[in-house]
Image (cartoon, rainbow, N blue to C red; front, side):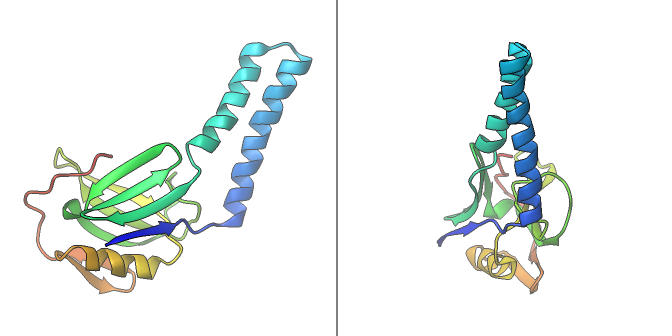
Length: 160
C-alpha cells in the first residue's frame, strides 16, 4: 500500500502561524530599511523563511513497511513494525500537524526507547484503518485507537 494523506487544517492555527511569520518578516525588513540593524533584520527574515521551509508542505504517507511524516524539509521514517499504538489526540505540543485534531503514534526508536509523533491527517479514522491494514500486528481496537497485538521484538525503530 502506498497512500498519502494531507494534514487537516485549523484555520485559526494557520492564521496565528501566518501572523507570527509576518511579524518576523515585517520586523526584519523594518530593521534593515529604517534602523540599519543588519544582523537583527536578517535574523527576522531568516526566522520567517525558516518557518516556511520547515513546515510546508505537511503530509503523511504509508509506504511499504513505513510511515513517512513530512513537514517542510524534515522527513521522519517510522517502520510499521516499531509502532506500538496510535490514538486520537488533541495534544498542544508542537508537531508536524496543522490541526489540533491529531493522532498520537507511539513507536520504539532504534535504541529501544519509546517515542511518539503527533500527526493530523484529514480523515483520522480512515488513516487508523489504513495503518491497521498496512501491518498485520496492528489491530484496530476502536475507531479512535489501534494497538499492537504483540510486543515488538525485533523492531528496527524509527529515525526520529
